[in-house]
Image (cartoon, rainbow, N blue to C red; front, top):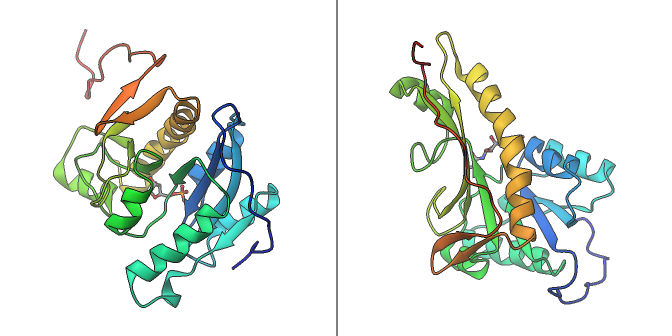
Length: 228
Ligand code: GAR
């Protein structure tokens, strides 16, 4: 496991810049979008369950400590989640940001970070939780598709919704074209949601999302466009 020699840092303090740990499993483009947004937050570490995740190299190049907790080394989810929590807690993080982290987490782990862990998912939840969201959206014939940022609660891709972005499904779309259109929006809404979270502008209160100083959306999304 990389980075174990780092000393533990101070207990989080409300007046200090918030600290996040980003969990990935692969490409890391959402992680990179968060890094590129240059948010006023400290990105304490990037942790992957996949040793070969491309995002680890991106983190390293950006001087963010990369770390691996390889799930295949564990025989059950409880043990993996226990070690993952230990690794996260070494950084005294305020928030845990799942960015393409493709492991189902145990209820105990999720409860431990209740209100402090968010996820991005490539569909308009609660439609299409799980895998192959773009293929399933095409098969279902939906006219709008999109992505969702949500607080994480037990269950796959479930929890109170913080932000969503929609995209049209266009004639001739295939999984790749639709995925690319959605990903562009993921890269817009996820850094913004992380900012809101770290600035205390979005909170989970009694199981519901509470906003402060977050503007309401303007307009309506209609697809196909109506004739004028
Ligand atoms: C993203 O599309 C993200 O929404 C999705 O994995 C991809 C990771 O890409 N997450 C999920 O499906 C979670 N259920 P990235 O590694 O380039 O950010």
